[in-house]
Each structure stands twice: as structure tokens, then as C-alpha cells.
Length: 53
Image 1 (cartoon, rainbow, N blue to C red):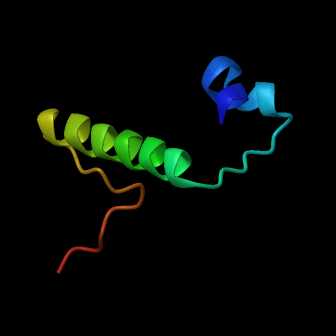
Image 2: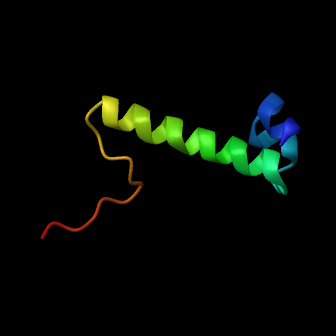
């Protein structure tokens, strides 16, 4: 995760593997920020929108 934080996906050689509490918390925080930002911009946080009903 440290290499990813510093250099993005290119810094990992294309492989990102995270294990443990710190990684889980990091990913949880990033997801929360992504969702919060989308909602503040009045957009969906879904990558693929749900079908209309």
C-alpha cells in the first residue's frame, strides 16, 4: 500500500495486495470519501448505475 500511496498503480508494478487492519481502514476511508464527494456533487457513487424501475 505504501508504494501505491507514493506512486500510484505504476509504483506497484501493476499489482496491489493489501492485508491487515491498516489496509482495511485505508480502503474504508477512501471509499467513504469517494461516496461523500459524489453525493456532495449530487451524483451517484455507483460505477454502474442501477437500472431504472
